[in-house]
Length: 301
Ligand SMILES: [Zn+2]
Image 1 (cartoon, rainbow, N blue to C red):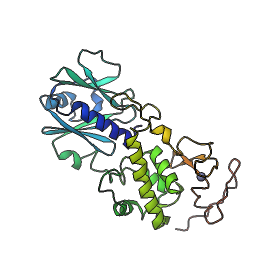
Image 2: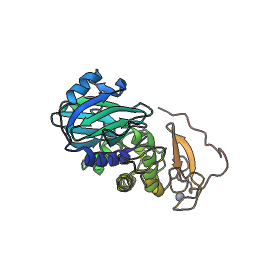
Image 3: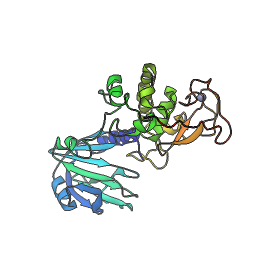
Image 4: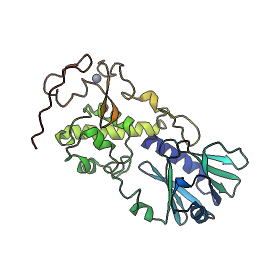
């Protein structure tokens, strides 16, 4: 699934490719991509004659701003956009085509068919689903340390699933949460409420730095991500911990372990990110499969 840096790369590329173009006709060949309005014919009719002004982003959603309309698009697992000459052969799994009056067209291709498009009057997109329930945006100016802590610091949830929850912070996915927690030296199973002030600062800085570097590198291309112009992102060459299980930690040389936290594959360095139960004792590397599991005390609450 594309994460925030990938979607930001798509946004930038798409903005360069389509801003200023006037839509002549829209063709929808897979109706269920279109979530609003209910009828794809109404969707197509509403867009005809409108000009794309810019492509913005909110979390992992693209907001295509037109004169008098906003198209909200989510790529989900495999969705991608491309701009082609109208006479170029249409690739398989192309479900929506936006024909422009300059001989080109924007094509939306989605092998898994999970992507969505919603059409709104300007402003309505931010006050209606799916955008109205989104948390703060970590690449936005409004993402201050105070705003970040205000969203999450008081919660008793483990910090990794908390960071993945789009209702609090939008756009952080599995790769970047693992990277940020490693950079900050925080174990993903720590409860948010137990983090100390310097740890919040480290985590905040790590989130900004990790996403910033990834955007600069054009996103990572784990699995099948390709940006709007078909270029592969380069960030996967810079990953510090994600996908590096059974390789030595870049900081201390300890073997990186892969576990499951909140249902997601999770990479941690047992030394750089002390486990909450084992913290306090001198951080020792636990070797061997399923080594000495501490018996969990019944939660007295
Ligand atoms: Zn380490």
